[in-house]
Image (cartoon, rainbow, N blue to C red; front, side, top):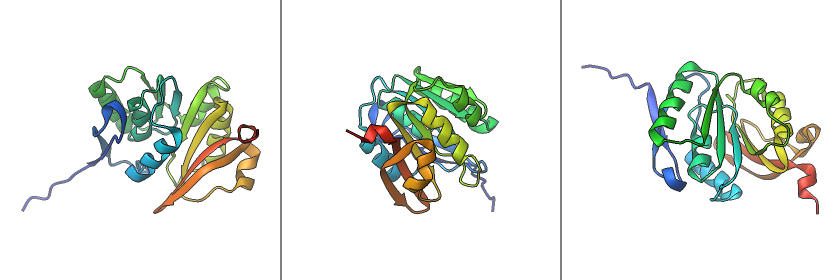
Length: 194
């Protein structure tokens, strides 16, 4: 009997022009695509139509969040990934979809976040490997990069309290827990006033 080795599985894009398109997920350390249910909820929170939005998927991995935003009409999506195999998979998917609004950057997400023009993005997706130590630096960079009315999506293994978010000038707008995933839609504290 021959044992087959499968080094990929798939998730699917759930809305927009690329709806139902499968995304191959390669087997890489720390790569854990956002579950369908969580992505569906996130894009219900953000809205189905992202036309004109400028988005950044800081730890792109499978590209599930960035390609979902592109599928829903985002004007631009920057996807950052440092793993060579994951990056190559993102390139293949971008070509397959002819996703011209998607820019792929091979490199360190924290460096790229710091190099972003302040207040230049409508949403930053942060879904780093759960065992990483990048949380504070990623949140600081994302808070700086989004507009005053922009959003930061944070996916983590734990719930982030208002007190813990305060140093970044962020607050929770919506959150949910699905299995081991804590999903947070954050905004600047002043955006909630008025």
